[in-house]
Structure formats: C-alpha cells, structure tokens
Length: 143
Image (cartoon, rainbow, N blue to C red; front, side, top):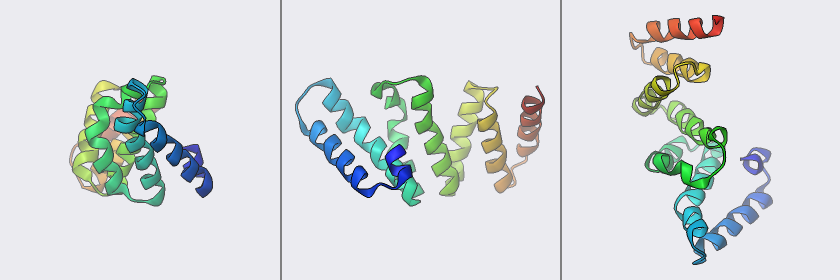
C-alpha cells in the first residue's frame, strides 16, 4: 500500500515481480497463500490507486473470508475490508457497499468510520434507513 501510495512505479514493479516469483515456487503454505490471496490483494491495492474500483470489488469479494490467511493484526487485515468498502462506494456498487456496511455495523456497532460510510451510502441512494443510521452516528460521536 505504501509503495502504491508513493507512486513509486519501479518499486511497485520490483515488489510485484518478487511476489510473483515467490508465489510460483512450490515452497509450501506461504507460497500458496501468496498466490491465492497475497497477489490478488496487491493487485486490488494497485487497482484502487488507479481508480479501477470495479476491479477491486471483483477481486476482493471472493477473497474476504481468506484475508486472515495472510497473517498480521486485525487492524492490518481490516485495511482490506475498508479498501473493499471504499471501492464499492466509489465504484457506485451501492448494493455491495450497503451489504458490507450493514454487516460491519452489525459486527462492530461502535465503529464510527463504518457508520459514517453507511450514512453516506444510504444518503446517496435516498434510503429511508439513512435517518436511523445518522442518529446512531451522532450518538457515537457524542459519546
């Protein structure tokens, strides 16, 4: 994510080549995780930076249940959930964004970021549920 955000084209190319070489080895579990999850995640990050939001959603939706396999902390893995939600919202995939945010706010009812995004998505489509979501966001902000 950092290399993509910095716009370091050479660094991105070297990183992706290294990941692809590693994934192509028969080095066991780690190489398999890189091939099946790591590379698609890296490609989704690059697609997001290019504004190819549909590609991000298409790549990440099937992988959601496998994010845990890459290791790292909950917060580190959560960045991929946030990236997916952001791509769905920006790509005008309102049905996907709404589903993901409903799931997230149910699972993490005190998550201000999720409620703010939920209000934005619901408001964009004029959904009546935006009123209740806005109330919940206001409650969290004032707590």
